[in-house]
Image 1 (tube, rainbow, N blue to C red):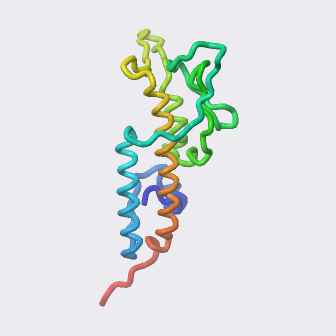
Image 2: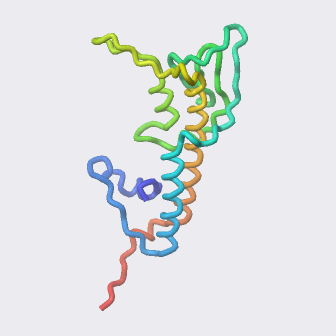
Image 3: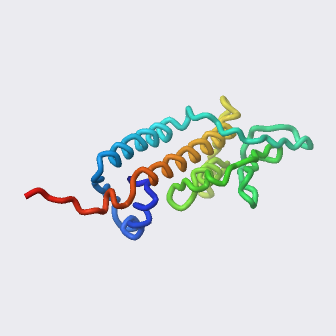
Length: 176
């Protein structure tokens, strides 16, 4: 229910300052839809590492030697490609994947922002997300995050079709 678009819209102000409250769903069919879709969402988010990679197009720059190394990825201006480094760009990013958001940014934006080499100014400690044992990890992760984002958007849309606002907002009739 916390993913339901109408729930988020209706309680937007409350969610800014309070913990979410899960509403009771009055129809059995709506409840069962929440259970089924919730299980699927839980599975794809908990097991994102096993998700199938979205088939992004690899555009290699033949002017420089190929490298898996990520210093700082960035999206192109039209947000259809991720520039991994000067030798590799992943293109064909579907715009729907940006609809799934973690707070105020998409999951893909979050990965691109977090998976970069950085140095703490005070301590000089370098944080490097590149995995020497698995050089392709970050590129594969981008494809998996696109898949998980698209699947999340599909399931949230399915939830919005199966469960209407009336299913949790309507008054229940008390028996005398």
